[in-house]
Length: 331
Image (cartoon, rainbow, N blue to C red; front, side, top):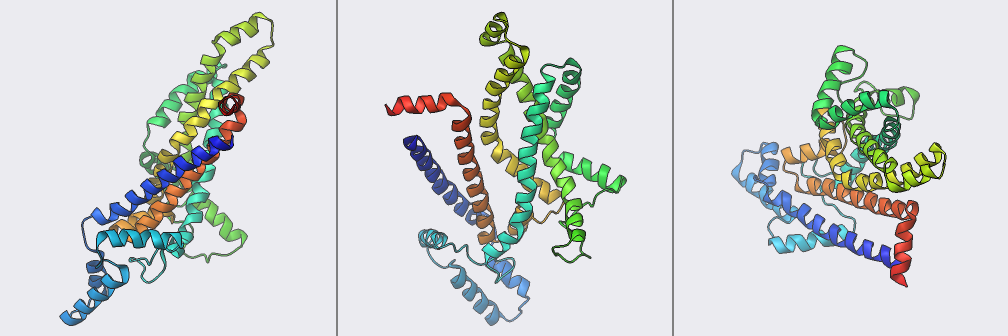
């Protein structure tokens, strides 16, 4: 088992290096000059002052160095935990900007991913053996899965926010409330959280429900289910075995869908102007903030890799065939 996880860690380490390198390259291939944007925002008219500011910023951010030196300096700073200074909110460190937004993104994504997976699998398993529920859940699941995240976000904002007036349309909390550890602020924070959460939850829910429903039907029609039924095994026992076998592909699907779910979360944050990483990425692109953009992408890459590794561990725990295969390989 140690050899298995060591191999996995090596694969994840190589993936991290490649992803971080691509992450570093993408902003530098974007059109535009961030230093020129900073000088323009300063509204300095004297040519000498403009040139002095340009030279100062190029030296500060290392843009006057060869590209290969910038790449080496990036890795050197990254290993020290230094993400650089933000161009958009200069001179605030990128790490501070990201840490302000990270709780919003995690508080939105983790409940949406986990709840949609659990509820979707439970609903799909019920639909596989209840015809009335199947006839309603299956079309609804296909409809939800076909909806883009931004589309259902706009629909929810119009229906529950604009028309019904139940929830706020944008922001992480009301501007007239000071952030604090109080019940009023917690309630306001929850009200702003509901619509972005529902957007992610509903789209993911349909896919998990359809997948589990199809897998349960396949397992109930398999040879071992027919054999157990012929032996007189109780239906509850057969369904339990079917569920345990059907949930394994769903765990694998969770690992494969993490990137899609993260991308959906970022788009949803932009639609609702939710103050998470999605809004930061949009602001970084608009202001050509190389360091903030690569810092946000780095957090996403690390989060997806850690989540995938944890799912690998869960898969080994819940599937005894994996442990048997590893033991056989080691012997």
